[in-house]
Length: 151
Image (cartoon, rainbow, N blue to C red; front, side, top):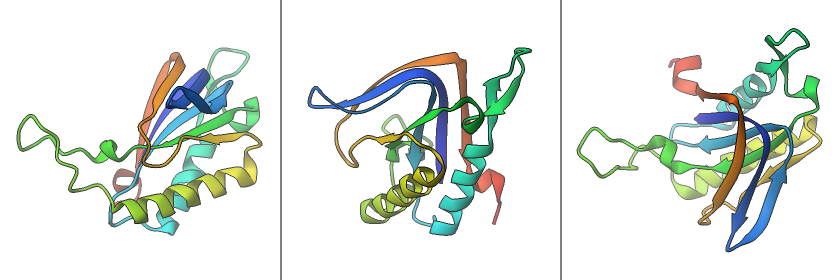
């Protein structure tokens, strides 16, 4: 599983010109699922993401977590995080999870986040979406379950 996390001061996702999710300060998280992912991996990923200390404290150091700043979440499913570019110029998505499994795990991540984060917005799984955001910093990090917990 991969989470591409962008620290933002605001973001929204639209589908067919209609806003379906919008946040103020927080994280935009693009969620990529592969076939080998499980609910246990999703739980570890959400726990790690929520504990990240990438907001600035009063001394300007990245020392505060999402919860400590009252941050919000915008979670968007993004199968292209598993694009394989080794074979040429057109990406292969063979490593991305089956859409039904990916939606199940994406929905599980959303549910887990809603337990501890008051504002959790989402895109629409499988839809063509437009995301507007103001990346604060810019500050973008990738969490990859293969790197965090190798098999």
